Every structure is written in C-alpha cells, then in structure tokens.
Image (cartoon, rainbow over all chains, first blue to last red; front, top):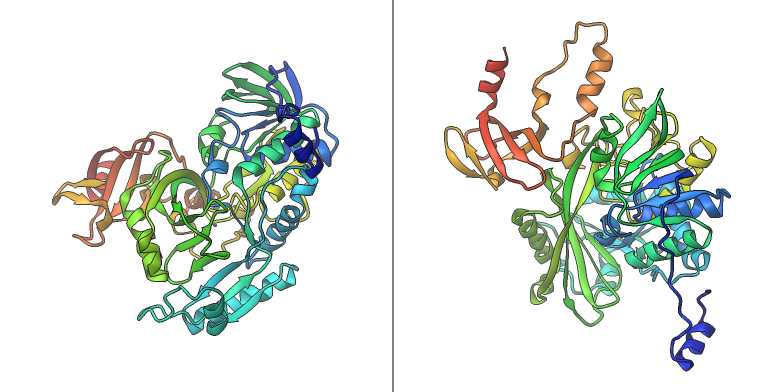
Length: 416
Length: 92
C-alpha cells in the first residue's frame, strides 16, 4: 500500500476499507545475517537503510517492548544541525539533509516541519561564541543567521527582553531546523523496513549474547536463541545494561532526562526557542501543547522518571524567559533514560568482539540524529568501515585523546 | 531525595553536588608500567549498574564533606550514607 493524496480521497469515498497494517508481526526465524537489538528510531532506521541502501536481505529488529516505546517516544522532537566541532557538525548536517527528504523517501507523513530554531544571546561573550558556532555551521552547509535584538522582538515579541540579569541581546538562528512527529518517524521507518523484508519482532527481550572465541554467534532472547552473523546494539539509555551482557564496560553513565507539555493552546510559538542563560527550550506541537525541557537529573538513574528539583528548575527557566508561560497549565511530565558519555558525544563503532557493533551514547541528542545514526550504523554494519560523517565517533577516541567535547567540561557526564 | 548525612541527619539532596561512582576514590598507581591504560580506564569507563550504586556526593551547601551514598538507581531509594574519609580509612 502506498500513501498518496489520491489514496486518501479514494478511501474517504469507499468507507476506509482499503487501509492495511503498516508492518507484519512475524515469528522470529532461527537465524539472520544481521540482528538489530532495539526497535527505537535508531534501530528501525538502521534496518531500513541496511535493506534500502546496502541491499541486505536477512535482517531482524528485536524490541523488548513495543517499537518506539523508549526514548523515541519520550523526546521533545527537535531536529537541528547547529553544532560546533568538526567531528560532530558534518554528521548532524547529514542528518538534517535526510530529514528534509524523509517523508518522500519513506512515503510516510512524519510531520517534518522546518520551523527554525533560535538560540538566544544574553551577553557579548555569548554573541562571540555563537558567531563562531554560526561560522562552523555555514562551513558545513547548514546555514546560520545572527539575529539582533530587534529581529527577535519582531519574531517572538512575548519574550522577557529586559530581564534584569539576563537581557536578550540577540540570537543565533538556523531556519532549516524544526520539529518532527516522533511516532511518525518510528512508524515510517518500521513500515519502510518491513516492506523491504525486515522482520520487526516486538516483545522480544535480548537476555544475553552467544560469544565464542571472541566472535558473536547470536543472541539469547525471551523468545529463544536467534543466530546472527552480525549484531548491532542500538538501545539508547539501556546501553550499559545490554553491553554488560557482552562483558563490556562503557564510557557512559545513565541519567534521567525529563520533558514537559502544557495544555493545548492556539498557535503562539513559531519555532524552537532556547534560553541562553539557563537550560530551557520550548516549541509548540501541532496539537497546540507547549513542549519544553531542560537539564537532566544530575545523578545516575535507570528509573525513567525524574525528581521535583529539576521540574522546579526548568519551570523557573521558562518563567524567566517567557513569563506568559505561567498562564498555561502543565499537562504532563515524563522521563527517559539517556546515555551520557564522557565527552557528551555519541559512539557508532565496532566493539572488541567480532560481529558485535554498537550505536549509543547519544546524550540529549538522539532524536535529531535518528536518520543519520541509522544510515551510518547501517554503513558500518554492511561495510565494516565507518561512514565518512561518523569517523570521529569511535570507542578509542578516549584513549587516543581525541574526545569531542562540545561543552568543554571533561569526563563528567552529568555536566554535558 | 533526602540523604542521611552521618553527622547532620537527613539533608535535601539539593544541598549536594554529585560526582559519580565511588570507585573514583581509588586512583591507579601512577608509577606502574601500565599506568597510562589504568588511568584511561579510571577516567573514562564506568560500571554504570542498574540497581545498587555506591557514589560520591559533596555537601557543598553544608559541611563540605564528601559522602559515599549507597542508592538504587532503578528506584532512587537511598540505602545508606557514610563519610568518604571513613570509607577510605577502612580501605587502608
């Protein structure tokens, strides 16, 4: 079944009887060429590109719960490519380009909306830093605009421009950034992968790896042993728990990151806005809710929920930036698990075990990376060499001294 | 979360800053031949357990002592707290 405007009209006139399921629910086979552990956005995108771009024919995605039930369903749906460092920025720009063509590529409405992002500037020093970042963005073809205070007043007049401590002095804008519908991304990739023969197996938890003589032979699961020539692990906040089963320690600590949504409101916030003096960012979903977030809860956690001090901190940031937010009622708050790495940047690499590959350590930034993480992880799985935009995301960068530390805070994961 | 400080009783976790795994107290011996590799593991690799975790908290807005707090990372339940200096002394 192919989605199109014509199909929508036809179904509307014939009682909606022609819609079919988006993916099958097959029984797992005894063995596959490639098994992907984790049916989130990254795992499904990996399977999709493996089948579509790299011509792999025997792929399974194993998911402990239902697809998209982890961080893919818990994020704040922002897409952007406004990084600074050479190891990062070309990768995120590659991702942005994949986002721009995603819906045509997967024939699925993922509601990609390039409504822009503005990072606010509150001091002269911050303007210098953002000018430098904007130049790095332009070098990678991402585009960037330095905005004056008056520009911002025209675009988003509701901000608190004359906050006594943090007056708004300007902003850095990426017009191509925006948001996407998180479930739509998961479903689009799942459907696209399924159409190309990928088996998506839900409610199938990986409980261990079968490793002999330093080579992986398959995975033990809650639905029996599944053989595999190659295994790609892409499990977001559970990386520590899963890779421990393969005997690996990682340069990662797991933390809880909270997000919030208000009641539905009429259109009020045009794009994504980030506060430059505290950690607070906000956008408005197409349903009308203000979606916002801030810092992680600053201690190791696998609880998928946060605590009240961070809620208070985030809401204070919101009130300082845009006092009108105080008139909206908070509808929901939730938490996800994030892999915080030692330099705040991700890992897409082989492991010391032959046939076992790892994609993780996405810190706060996994959602925007979904298409490129899937593409480059698929490249690595299929060709055994890193994709040209992901050559820096190696395990050995820590002992070689080539960390990618955007924030420059060192090996202290809760500060990234 | 309330942290049961051994000297001051229950204190709000907001008074503390968090460093990480308590094994960070055991620095490798810099004079050994494998010191470079040992320090790399020490600085960058973590056990990151789901469950009971012993971790370092600094009572920054209190008596400025370091504590070793035992906490369950799956529930946030705090199981105990000791002065880091006592833990270090007992290890010697």
